[in-house]
Image (cartoon, rainbow, N blue to C red; front, side, top):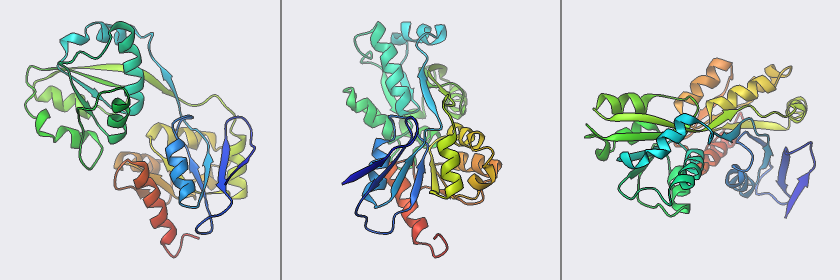
Length: 276
């Protein structure tokens, strides 16, 4: 049985009446409507998910640069999708101009979540790393070694790492970005977050993007010092570095970027003698 405690706007505390262990509050910072699976896994583990989106995703369909890429899509031999958001917003733009992704284009994803999202649209044949879900692992695949002369589009949000672009360009490919969405700080109040920090409800933080943890840091004022005392789960070394630069004192890095790995890291943290 699930119980809901009302808090302002779209911020929710999700709990269950019967838990396997004494539940703890876990702050989930993913964008709204993209955190359901992680919340479900947290609940199934017997804990409490505190949903506080620290990032908002907005489409970039009006971008002339993106429309130019989409209009010339047939000239590309490969399309790389950085994230599930990239899949969703890129395909939305593509379907406005084409019935489908041209069949000769090879599809590649940085992570499993992107591959699953592509599969929802019927594209199941994708190049995806087997273990570590990051740009370096994708670049290590045999299919991306000999790309000289190929034309590759990388669908992503605004900004971000350039390792894919730089490496594929160095290997002789002609690479362009298709920036199909923007990551922005939610235009909402921080009152629920301040309350969570003051009363100690949040015992651990999960973050899946550097932008989200930066936004959370800004939104935590004037309780920033309390935020930095809370352990934070990061899904990559890059995000962990950002957390460290912000001043977080306890940072746990997951084995990979999957929701299952996040919950596993939470369980490992709970099992340590000094966590409670």
